[in-house]
Length: 225
Image (cartoon, rainbow, N blue to C red):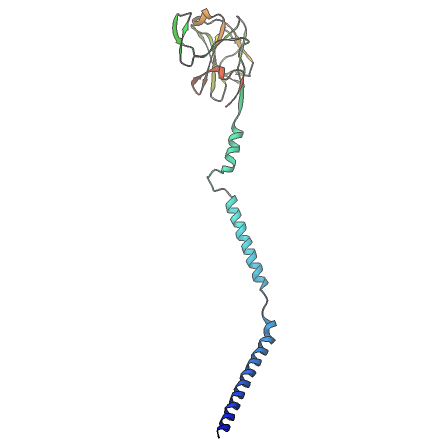
C-alpha cells in the first residue's frame, strides 16, 4: 500500500516537472521568434533632435556675438581710442636761440621795468625784420597793437592750443580770419617796449584749453594731442 502511494506521488512530480519544462520551452520559442522584430532607432526622431540641438547652438552663438543695444562694445573701444589719438608737430617761430624760459609762475627780475614779475612765455632772440612764422596750422583770431608788447598776433592752432606772438612790427601779413600753415610767415620781428632792455626778440606765449603752458614742451617736438 505504501509503495502505491509513493508511486502516485512520483507520477505527479514527473507530470508537474514536464508541464513546467513545456511552458519554459514555449516561452523561449516565442521570445526567439520575435527578437528580430524589435523596432530600430527612429532616424526621423534622431535627425529632428540633432537639428534642434544645432538650432539651439546657433541661437546661443548669435546671442553671444550680438552687442546689446545702447551698450558700448568693449572689443572696439580701445581701437577707436587709438585711432582718435593724433600727434602734432610744432615748429620754432623764429630762427634764433631761446634767451628766457617760461617761469612757471615764479617771479623773475625784469631789467626794463626794474621789478619782479612772472614771465609767461619764452623769448627767442632775433634781429629787426626777421620773419616770424606760424608754429603750426591754424587760424588768426586777433591782431592788436599793444603799448607794452608791440603788435600781438593770436592764432588758434586747434586741439585747444592757442599761441600769442608778441613783439611784431605793424602791418603784418595776416588779419583776423586768416588761415595759416606751419612755417608760414605771419609778420616781421619788431620791438617789445616792456622788455626793451633784453634786446630784439619774439615773446611767445601758449595756452592749452585756456591755461598757460610752457612753449618749450611743444616747440621743435611732435606732441600727442
